[in-house]
Structure formats: structure tokens, C-alpha cells
View 1 (cartoon, rainbow, N blue to C red):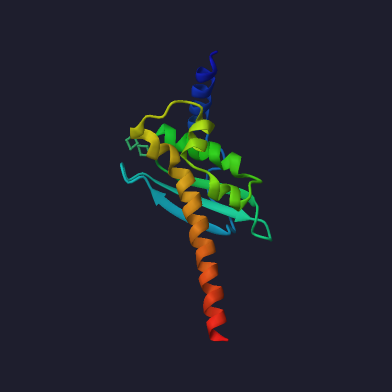
View 2: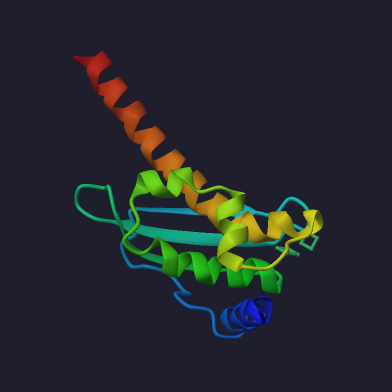
Length: 140
Ligand code: FES
Ligand code: FES
């Protein structure tokens, strides 16, 4: 009872006082993505540990509505200590759970924007590393 209110307060708090905004000095990868519905953009910097398995730090910046900003802020906290594999497995249900409120179909792209940006950034980073390896192997 009242849970939904608590979540609403939490979203408002993250929107007004976003955590982990700005940029990282030496991110392992950085990626910008936009919500195609509105053109709002979020950039995410992600620092991985030496083994490149665990997320050590995250910072984000960009524009967007309250849902997108709160979602980015909450996600930035949640990602700390998470493995890259866990990040890759996150889906919209996890984000809706994290936010704790009903998200209308209109706003789902706002809610998942930061998550998509982090996942795409990881995909591109590890995809390019894979490509590098293949190229190096071809050169041998
Ligand atoms: Fe965010 Fe419509 S695209 S509210
Ligand atoms: Fe643009 Fe929500 S309206 S991210």
C-alpha cells in the first residue's frame, strides 16, 4: 500500500537530483543514443574493471523528460558492480521494475533509453574488439 507513491517520489528525486551525472575521465567505452520518438539524447560513459567483466563506474549526461532522466540516474546506480553479461541481459521489464510505476507504451522508449545506450555501447565496444582480434588473426 502506498508503494506506487513511494516509487513516484523516488523518480522525482532522481529527476531533481540525478546521480552520476557528468563524464568519466577514462571510460572503457562511451556511447550516445537518442529516443527516436523525441530526439532526446543521452550519453553514457562506462568504466570496466581490468578484466572487462564488471562495471566499476558509470556517468551519464544528456536531455530528456523526467522518466528518461530518472531512469538513467537509477540505472547508473544499479550498474555499479554489475557484470557486463548482466547488463546485456537487462530488458524493458527490468527497467519497468526498477522504476516501479506503470509506464505507458508512449513512454517506454523514454524509460529504456539509458539502458539501450549502455547496452549498445557495450555491444559496439566488444564487437570492435572481436573485429580487432579477427583482423589480427588474419594478418598472421
Ligand atoms: Fe517520451 Fe513521448 S517520446 S513521452
Ligand atoms: Fe524525450 Fe522522454 S520525451 S526521452
